[in-house]
Image (cartoon, rainbow, N blue to C red):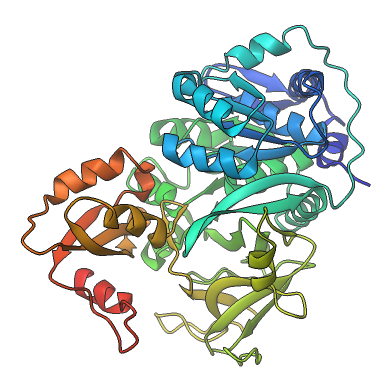
Length: 511
């Protein structure tokens, strides 16, 4: 039996006086963080929640927000992080689907969050704002910091991460304490984490990259995190000289490379730059290596699995190769198969399937979908297309045990590190006045990796204002889902079976 928080705190409390978090305004030692976590866990216990109760959270990134996550798993409940960009209609779905017992929202959203909570049967609603204040902090003020960790079993749920589907609403990936512990321990060893590391943390903490990969790495090592609310190039340049690790999405590296001050002298202490959540353009990889004298480490993971593969950390005998995601991590099995489940040979594109202690246990309240996404012999179908070995676009040979992601069989778009699923946006556009039908595609973008683009067919004799359409979408969708461009066409290209040929649309509008 192992509670994730117990495993993490057994490591970071070896040196409780060490700085855990450094914000632009304050510092937190591990003892102070541990005490705050204890207060929040005691508060959760006062609510008399049922075992396995969900705690939904949509708040800005603060030390208090991190403590709330840790308190939830410490107390044996299930953490449900929600993207801060989600709008009211999107939050309504998550509350209805997950049926959380607690919803902690930003103070500015309480006016609409409270009615939604009541409508969905959420028993307790609290607030936490960007300054770390709110009704949550008032409530825990009288709570003790001493707390006995819940005796969680390995297969008890620790978190549910919602990941959208191409044919419907979002799916909740259920992750256990064991899933998260195994990945934290593997990455700690593989990436050489040490207690004297300093992580530049600019990622959001509502998805796997910032919350699990980055935070668990630092916490398990007892290392320090420079805790910035979001990407801030000037702040990054200020703190980089004292940091040893940085994790980011490709956009972060594009923005930093645009600064002449970002050079080898500034980053003398940096031992590891990690990029993930979206494809890193080879131009960015090469420009970074040329300027910085070291290569960005690209890796591959999913909300359902944590990290699966990684380019090597030790580069004395192995090379980091741009446009690949490296080798399977220790304890993780990866295979590439064709449509008939036959193993693909080197350089043959096929479906990526995975197995390991890090792989989730299924989708929340979707047993049939869960069965569909696993093979008869227990491998999870990632929905991604890949190949072993081969050559890069520049002709460089790739070792046969290195994996390259070449496409996504589910039409997933990754923009700025966030997953965007076309079906969700198409459904909304198709319901708008004057629209006959639409197709949403992703096109290469130097900054965001991929840009969301909509192709729209108007109803007969109707003139559509694309700027007005875009403004309507901004009021409905999170900003990263809103199409950067909207193109009007007479008809969508279709094959003989009537399926829209998105590959032709990508070719047409990427010129």
